[in-house]
Image (cartoon, rainbow, N blue to C red; front, side):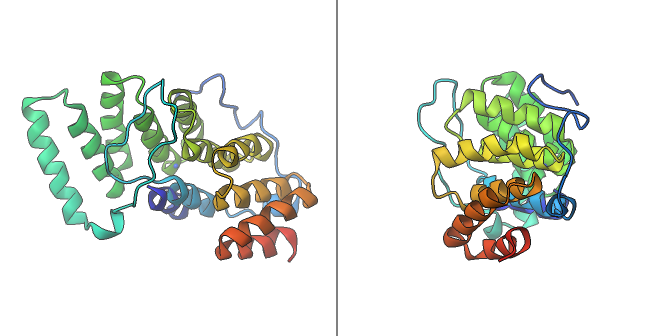
Length: 246
């Protein structure tokens, strides 16, 4: 799924607002050239790729005590024809069993891979009505909303994902990425910090926390994070040079 979040963020970036989600009028606007020059679409793509999960049915309950399983994203090994076949299979199942949760989830994920984000969200809506405490459904719906630039609804979904699976580093990362899209860099930092508490080697979280620090004029913190990100992932050297002047 990591490749899906980064894919979502690179293509464009992933309507009700919760009390936890801040509107664009509430967030801190960019105060530095780093913030003004931020490639927002790249942030969305990274979030999609960094927090994307496999099409496997990974679920978590409110009582989950361990991190969501790390799985290999199979998207690169599947073609559009494969996803269309999955949709046809799910359609057949849902015709006779319209409340089949697994079929709804499979179809939603396949539609998401085909960039049918609005259609995928409809299936996630149906799935969440069947299992309203399923963290994976909220997480995946949040990714699709992030892709559609529905940032407040995406944050709302990531709020639910972290509520029902507080060990999910990727949901915290996704929420931070959504806040960055709204220029809420200060609000994004705690989400990346939480993701790092769950995984101290989470290179993308270091990178985007560093960018957020740079965007609110905290160059020392930005430099430290971006250097760490570059140590963990050589690709982050680009951000180190751009946002920390190295």
